[in-house]
Image (cartoon, rainbow, N blue to C red; front, side):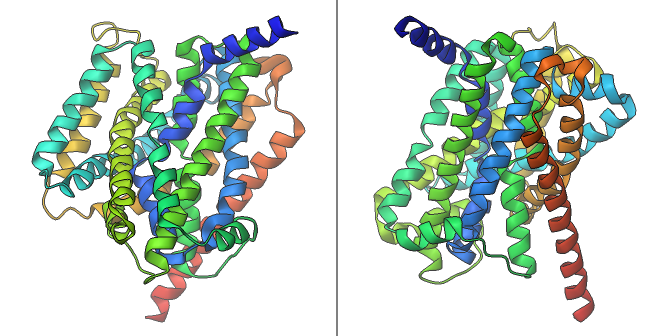
Length: 414
C-alpha cells in the first residue's frame, strides 16, 4: 500500500507542469485587470461566477490533457486532421489576433507595474521582451518549465494582499454561492470577460501541446488529471482574492472603473505598503510570465495546424517557423506598448470578451474530437463531461447574444 502510494506521488511530480502552469498563467495582466475591474465596479457581486467557471475549467482542461496523453498530438493538429486545413486556418487566424492583443496587454502590465516605481516603459518593456525571448529560445522544455513553476508559486502574493485589505469576508462568502445577474451592459460584459479570461481559448491549445511535449501518456493519466484539477482550483483561489481585494479597497470606498491593473494596486495603497507592494509584485510576475506563455501558445497552435516543426526541445535551425513566429509576436507585442496614446485598456477588456466569444467554437471542436471512438478508444468523454461542455456552449452563446442586444438597445436609445 505504502509502496503504491509512493509510486503515485513520484508519478504526480513527474507529470506536474502543463496543467498547473496553464491554469496559473491564465491570471495574466488582462485577467488581473478584468478581476480588478469586476471587484472595483461591482464589489462582491461577480464572485458567484468563479464556481461554475472552475467546474468548466476543470472539464475543459482535463479533456485537453486526456486528448494529448492518449493521441500524442496537439489540439490544432487534431483539428487539422479531423476537420481539414480550411477550418484550422480560420480558427488559427482568430486565435492569432486575440492572442496578440493579450500579449500586448501583458507587456503593458510589465510597463505599468514598474512605472509605479518610476521605471520608464522604454526601459522595462524592451528588457522584458529580451528576457522572455532568451528564456524560450535558449532553453529546453525542462528548464523553461522549472522557471514557469517558480513563477506560478509567486501568485501567493495576491492571497496575502487580499487578506491585508481586510474585506468583508461574510459578504464575499454569500456572493460566492448566490448568483446575481443584472441586465446591464457593463455587468454582462464583465461576466463574459470573467469567463473569457478564466477559460481562454489559447489555454486549451497550449495545455495539450505541453502535455505532448512533456511526454505524458495514458499510463500517467490519473496523476496528470489530479495536476490539472489542482491547477484549476489554485487559479480560482487567486482570482477570488484579486476580486475581494479590489472590492474591499475600491468598491467599498467609491465604486468605479479602473484604468488598468496598476490603478487597482494604487487603490490598495491606503491599506498599507505591504498590500500595495505585493499586488504590484504579483502584477509584474504575472505579466512577465504570460508574456512568455502566450506567444509560445500561439506558435504551438499555428505550427501544429500548418504542419511545421515545433517545440522547446527543438533548436532554432530545426524549427525556424516556430521560433521566428515566437520572436515576431514578442517584438510586435512589446513594440505596440511603446506607441504613445495607444488605447490599451479598452483593448485589454475587449480581448477578454473576445476570448469569451471564441470559446464556444473551440469547445465544440474539443467535444467532437474527444468523443470520437476511433481517436480516443476507451478514453472518450463520460456523459457528465459532455453535459457540462454543451451547457457551457449554450450559456456563452446566450451571454454573447444578450450583450449584443443590450449594446444595440443602448445605441438606438441615444
